[in-house]
Length: 396
Image (cartoon, rainbow, N blue to C red; front, side):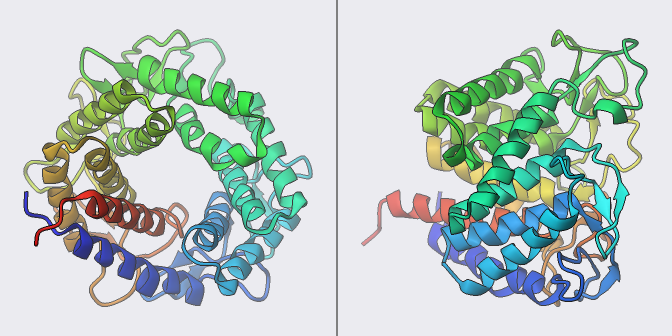
């Protein structure tokens, strides 16, 4: 198939370094109170000053990651450390249990019920430790990771609102993120712990939550790994599955496991075909595995992160396997994503479209969207397409 990997890689690189990263550098830094503003309108103006820990930590991670992986720019490291200082001072309860949200000044608003605050704090301080060698950053990352492992069987702990024992379910999100998190901070952990965490996470994702009869992955199963015929038990999140599959591909590459690689690619493609909206294009946000109406009223919206994670997954799948179907789908999703999410007038991307692909909310950042999926996705696809180009036969 005639596809210019080099030019497309340059498109992603340029968007990342000339538009998206400058948007966050210019608009998100809170010089007065520390940390970052994430609630930014289409042009980058602040419309709410609350600070959400997982987005604060993601932005720290993003700038530290750029410093470590792209170029050692002093302003990127300072941007990361600016957020880290705020997190260290205000982000946790003193025991490194990370709050969900704070006021602009750093007063806690929402208790540390959400383990993903902890996951992204671990990632942030792990990257910063790599960038600086600062032992305090390493200690915070390691201790927070230990806390996550202790909480993984009951992530919400005392904040769980469900009645215990009636319909116990376990969620896909945590084993999925552990696939990525274990690689992010392996430089801080004993090798045995890294390998054990990876093996357990792969088993959960690929054996427990995966349903061989449908070829799809569920968001929730019983503690025994069985199907629950309930709203939560029937729930599918195509973007989650597809994102998880590139984490698995990274692990399969590390383990040199071609069977695991092929299984990840198959699940990714099966999920994409199931989740694609044939009428309007794009990938649905939520689906019911039995085809029933989902309980999420936003089920048919088209979200930025779902499409960007899909582009990462497809590019990696093609790089590792040469499967032409992955390249065909990459072009299809690439065209949809750039036509609908990229803002032709202002920097950064829209996050929320209606089913028809029209902009639903013109914000560039909010409570759930920050400096993470767009820049991470642009970076990952840029790097992967460059690797594909490097190993492609060159025409004379």
